[in-house]
Image (cartoon, rainbow, N blue to C red; front, side, top):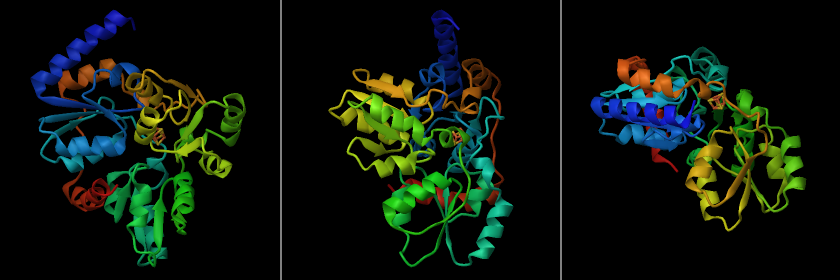
Length: 311
Ligand code: SF4
């Protein structure tokens, strides 16, 4: 698409959003032209907070389906739209509510902490939700004598065990994009870019290894944490280990610094299913409406509220 075509679609999208009194929320793994037209760009936690606080009539969620579901739970009086209902998540698909019920039955009395990358049905079976931005604080808020079931991301779970010193029961799920960022990817950068800080998302397959480096220029951070860290750091160069969409946000918000992906193939095909044309069509035609069955939403809401309130 040419710059002129993008500009013209941006104008159309902004006009349709104004007419519908809609707010456009975009995850920071979205394609650049969608990030650039959004009202807010952020991570799951930040966007959940925006969804809960907005006074718009419609929320258009440019992200994957579980995120739009979370917005629908937090803002039941709003219309929530997703431009492509097939934008799923391999991590959220790694556990079903039935599987979680079976796991809970094996651990009676355990506290269930679900990463936000889960379906509404799984959240409804959970005590707490968390994001990578506040997962450590959520675990630390649970009394030390309680058993914890953590799901579904095993790399995030292993990282949490290390930073909290707690032993967790961990579901063996993974995100195919982050799991694909291997220790060899970051070892290469350790050698090739000795002047750079390495920012690693805890979902990555390399996160535990990165921690083991134990050096002062390796940092395990949520995507929101990466933006904040880069802005405040005196360093000029950063290697980024997460989905590559975050580079656009980093370049836009911290333009004076240099960002490079440790693995350029770390692309989430689900996130990239949302295009500017689909966003335009969504606003124009009021599609695709995301709803959550009220009984499920009510049970999931408690876990999500606890997530938003911590960290
Ligand atoms: S990057 Fe991974 S966790 Fe995030 S939406 Fe894509 S598949 Fe899911």
